[in-house]
Length: 122
Image 1 (cartoon, rainbow, N blue to C red):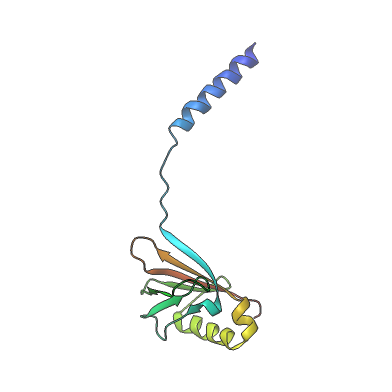
Image 2 (cartoon, helix red, strand yellow):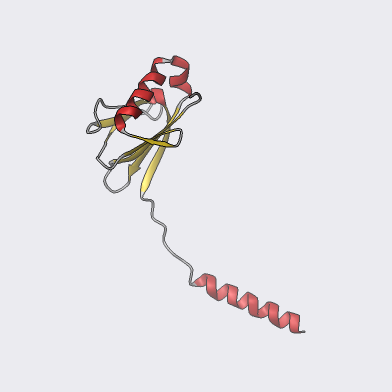
């Protein structure tokens, strides 16, 4: 009998505590996974990144800012170094098609918050 009371009390507490836990989640950024071939980088960090999400999709350009961060295989790099690595990979046809780029865009402003690049190799 005591076990039933304890179980009923725990169940009631669980019901009431979850009712208070509702919250609205916001999506601060939108992410796109692309091959390197689908992504065109500007010559400087103050330009815009152009992407084509699919063969039938139109090109879209998004502005880079001073706060945009660049990653290669999880390591943070300055834009110039990121661009050098991307250009080297792009020169290799197979690497350009197999390297994965992620572009993250701020939902409110449409500006690029970060660009990541993952590839096999050193």
